[in-house]
Image 1 (cartoon, rainbow, N blue to C red):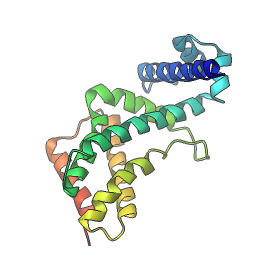
Image 2 (image 1 turned 180 degrees about the vertical axis):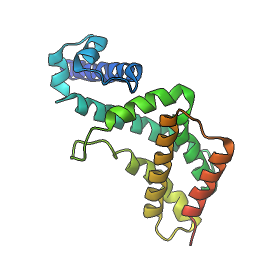
Image 3 (image 1 turned 135 degrees about the vertical axis):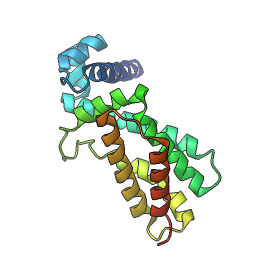
Length: 192
């Protein structure tokens, strides 16, 4: 039983890695087929459908996995700061890394492929908002926000929208733009 679980975990990992590679390579020109992903993973269609009911389910899993990694990275950077303003700034730096050249193509391709996931319970379209917003609740509480959960959610939605704008325009924010976004985000978490 343990070997079968390890084999299944390995298959899922291979499918996620292959999907990331194929989706990034296809960019926003074409949506890869399940056949493209299983070929890149060196697995069969049976293996694919053992773990995912559709390509959309795989894309949703890939987006959720990416969110988990981003949340972990962001929390790590935030933990290095002693002030709430410093933690908010670190949150923004970590999240905006998605606009850097080495990440932007993959981010753009994943967002484009995830855009047709719909709004049902299996959708991962907005699943990344809550865990990222949760990281801002404590700093916003310390800054004196009257409603830190709402302010964290609003900031996260606004920032992720700007990130989407940047990656689809194939642009990187300037330092002045980042400074303005930091100022906006700090004001959002301040008493007011």
